[in-house]
Structures are given as C-alpha cells and as structure tokens.
Length: 239
Image (cartoon, rainbow, N blue to C red; front, side, top):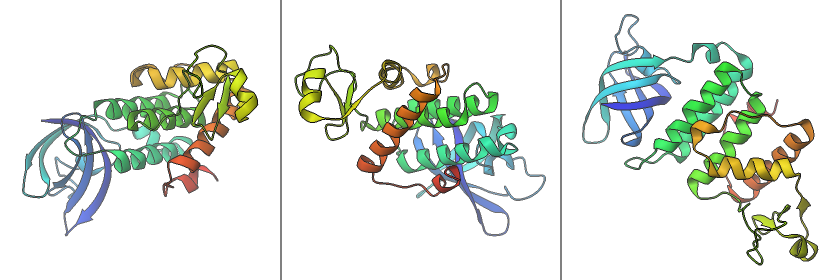
C-alpha cells in the first residue's frame, strides 16, 4: 500500500493511463492504471493529477500497476480556481523533476500536500505559497542558501546581508568587502524559518509588500543562477 499524490498522467492505449506518483514509501514512481479512462472505472480518480490518497499496487519489471485506490482529497476546488491551478500544476512539475524513486520523499510529499492545502484554503496568497514551496524545495535538495552564519567568517551575529556570489549571508564587516544586499529583518527571519521548519508548519504567516518583493527577488535570482532549470508551467505563472 502506497500513500501519495498523482503528479502526472498520460493515456496509454484505449482505456489505460500511465501516471507518476510521489509516495511516502517509495518516492517518485511510475505506474499503470488499467481501465482508468473508462467512465465508470473504480480507478478513474487514480488517473487524475492532484489526487491524494492510498494506492494498492504491485510491482512489475519496469513499473508498478495500480489495482485499487482510496482517494482522500481530489483538490477539486483547486482545479476550478484559475489563481490556484497554475501554482498547483507548477508544484506537481517540480516534484516530478526532483522526486527520486526508492528514496525517502516523506518531507517532499508533506511539502506538496501542505502547499496544495494552503492554495485550497486560501490561507496565504498564491505567490507567497510559491516562494515558500520553492525555498523549501531547495532545502530538501540540499541547494538552499546559507542564511544562518556569515559565509566569510562564520559568525552568527549581524548577518543581515545577502551575497548572491557567496550563496547566502555575510556579516556587516564582510558585506563591505563582498557587496550584496541588506536584508529586511523579516526577510532574514522568514528564510531561516522556511529552511529550518518541517513542511507542515510553513504555510501559516504573511509578509508585508516590501518584504515579499525582496524575498521574491532573492529566490528568483538565486534559482536562475544556481538551479539551472526552467519548468514549463512557469510561463503561465508569469502572465
């Protein structure tokens, strides 16, 4: 039995689908869903991206086959909300890209699920949900900026300055040497909070406009410089 979220789905043959699942037990896997395109199939929901639940599956040579599913959340409100559906589609694509088969992806699954719940419940603006999701994804991948100590001298005091070249914070003394950007205190705290907190605790705050814009600018430029991948769904988020 696997607990997970359907990330992608594509038709196979006349009635079947091939899906990718992000699961707690086996990470990102590929699976066939036989008969998923039949209107009255009990596996109809298993072939739909965003479906979260438990999936009974058996493993073949190259992939799994889903034999039974019990969906706990279809995220139907997201599917019908234009402001939520594109961020959600982006989150699925990111998890499909970074998720690894056979690895412990529990935290990535929790991050995806709680980000989708935040979109569904409208507890944060979609753009802020996206920033939280992106920075935490970096942390799960081990690619996050260091915002806990000066990357020149190691001090944890007065480190409110961000150096893109150093990939993180520097103290006031080395800021004068390295250059960079003075961080708003709320932005530094927010980045530290996102990186260090468990996924299920992340979507419970808001930022003022100036702090949001600074956080967005840092994460955008950091991703473009160091992550080196552009997702197809991003173009819809920029419009």
